Image (cartoon, rainbow over all chains, first blue to last red; front, side, top):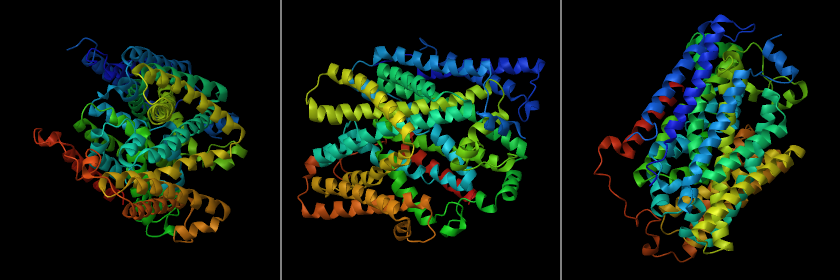
Length: 70
Length: 567
C-alpha cells in the first residue's frame, strides 16, 4: 500500500550517521586538545571508536534503505 | 570531594557541552521531520490508529518493546538495582519473557483474527458493552493521568540531572509529541519508538562496556559488590527462600506467581499501550512473531539497566541515598545511577547521545500513552456512545483532536502533581488496580468458551474492587500486609505482587461462578474469539526456522540458561 514510502531504517541510519559524525569529530578534536577534566578511562578514547562505529552503521543503513532503492 | 558529587550539590549532575546540545537538537529535528513526512500517508482510520496494519514483525516487535522502555523505567530500575541488587533483573526476565511468549503464541491469534482495534474492543466482542465500557473508561482515564505523572517525573529528572527549568522540559517535549503523533498517528509513534530503541542502545551500551573494563571483568565486579554491599546483591534466586534473606523482602512465591504470572501477564498481554503495537502487524505470523522478537531483545535489556546499577555499587567512590534523603541534602539519589554512570564514562557528544536516549525514552513512552488513549477514546467511547456511525474523515479528525486533548490533559496532570506531589504514588497505584483482573477476564474469555457476558463483567468489577480494597486496607492499617502476603516479614515491594495475585484469583472465581449461573453464547457466536471454536491457520507452508514456536523455544532455552547462570 505504501511501498513507495521511506523506510524507518533509513531514518535510523540518518540518526546514527549524524550522531556518529558529531561524536567522532569531537573525539578526534580531543586527541589534539585533551580536556581539563577527562572522564574515567579517557585514555581509551571511546568517542573515537564508538563514534566511528555509529557512523559506519548509519552509512550502511542509509545505503541499504535509501529511498528509491528496489 | 568527588567532582560529580560536588556538581550534584551545586545543582546539577552533569554539564552539557555545545556538541551535546547539537546532538539533542538533531534528535528533535529528526522526530518532527518523521511526523511531517508521515502526515501524507495517515489519512484513513486504519492508517491513523493501526498504522495501516502493515508493519513487519521486526518493526512491530521493537516498537512493542520500546513502548515499555521509557526513561523513567530505565532510570528507576537502574536505581532499584543499586538498592536491591541483581534481584531487579526479575522484572526483565521472569516478569516479562513468559508473558511475551504467551501473548505471541496463544493470545495474539484471537486479538488479530477478531480484527479488534483495541483490548476493550475485544471485550465488547466477547462479553458485550458493559465490560468494554468499564475497561475503556478506566484505561483512557488512567493512561492520560499516567502520562502526566511521567511527564512531571521526567521534568524533575531533567532539573536534577541537567539543571533545566521544569516548565521548559514539560512544554518542549509534550508539544513535540503532540505534533508528531497528531500528524502521523500510530505509524509516527511506532517509527519514533524504533528510532528511540536504537538510540537507547547507542547511548547506553558504552556504560557496561567501559564499566566492566574499569572493574576488571565480571568476577572482579562481583567481588567489589560483596565488599561494598553484601553477597545477597549478586544472586537472582538463591536468596528467595524466605522474605528475610534478601534486600527486597519478598519470597519466590511472590516473584513467580505475583510478578511472573499475574502482573507480568496482565501488563504484557492486556495493556493496550503495548498490545496496540502488535495489532499493527501486516499478517498473523508477523503478529505472533513480534512479541517473540520483543522477548529476545528484552532478555538483554538488563545489560544497559541492571549492569550500570551493579557497576555503581562496585565502582562509585561515594554512596547514593534514598529520594527522601536526597531531597533534603542534595546528594545524588538511587535514581541518579544512570546519569551518574553516563557522566563517568561519556565525554562531550557521547553524553549528549546518552541524554538524548533518556529524552527519547520519555517522549516515546508519552507518545505510546497518547496514541493508545486516542484509539480507545475514538473507538470504544466516541464511536460506541457518542457518534455510533462516524465517517472515515470523522474518525481521523477525532483522532487528531484527541491526541492534542490527551497531551493537554497530561500537561494539566503534570502541573496538578507539581502542586500535590503526594498524589503521584496514588495515581501510579490506580493503574495497577485494573491490570491483574483485566488479565483474568481476557484470558478466561479467550480460553474458556463457557465464560458468559455477566461472568466477565462481574469478575472484572469484583477483581478491581478487591485490589482497591486491599490497597486502602494497607494504607489505613499497614499490618494488614502480613495477612494477604501470608508473612509478617513481607515488605512493601511484596504488597504489589500479592495484591495482584489475590485480585486475579477473585476475578477468576467470580467469573467462573457467575458464568455457571448464566446462559453461555453458542459456539457459532464465539468463532474468532475463543480457543477450541476458532479455526487456526496452519503454518506448514513455511520452513521450521520461520515459525513462531521455533523461535519461542530458542528464547525459552536462553531464558532458562540465563536464570541458572545467575542463580
